[in-house]
Amino acid sequence: MKILAHRGASGYAPENTISAIKMALFDMPCDGIEIDVHLTKDKQLVVIHDDTIDRTTDGKGNVKDYTYEELLEFNAYGKFKDKYPTEKIPTLDEVLSLVKESGKMINIEVKNGSSFYPGIEEKVISKLYDHSLTSDTLLSSFDHGAMKLCKQIDKNIRTGLLCRKKVENPKEYGRLHYADAYNYRYLCLTKKYVDELRSYGYEVNCYTPNAKFEINYMIKCGVDTIISNYPDRVKDLLRK
Ligand code: G3P
Ligand code: CA
Image 1: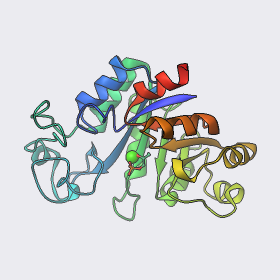
Image 2: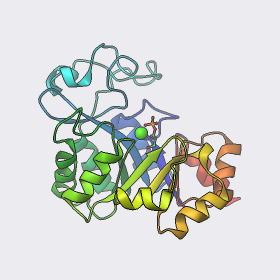
Image 3: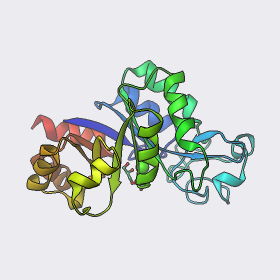
Image 4: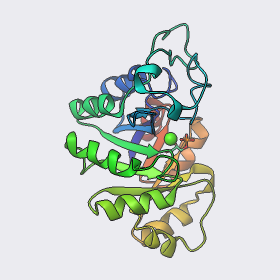
């Protein structure tokens, strides 16, 4: 069972920042990280969760209305202002360099597809080639059309469908979107459903169990990957 640090080690450092990402990649017992990407006004891929910078930085406004240079003015301290007062919004390039150095893996969540960010799928895939990170990386999105497009652009790229609730006819639905994996909200899953999805050939990953009882439940369900804010907690429970 793999463990991914959700938005980096976001239980301990500001989500989707270099500090949280380095902590997960170099100091934590996990297999890699999950992060979120958006496009800036000048078409740079940046690592941040929301469409806006309001919640996680000291600024306001849409990511897509700022150039990357302009975004560097803001501090991305999120919930950790005292300990990490001067974090910047990272680029995907910076993060991929660290992933490469660590030898761990990355799951990149594409936050919106081409209807919102024209060309984002090609840009993300191109970055994976720039960093020689195509084989072990998983792309995922709630925008299932974006994942289908990624696979059409490059059949070697691994894709996962993010789901907040159970999809109807998952065997066919996944095929229609050329998906390799289902990345389900953990509350949707049971062992029976995980086994069913796996019998159709899909990898089954879950987000975001953080409490011990939630993590233990996912371990019992036998998912392929647990994506958690507390990767160290998952590792401890797996050892028991
Ligand atoms: O990729 C798993 C999870 O991150 C999806 O939900 O809202 O935390 O990006 P969210
Ligand atoms: Ca995410």
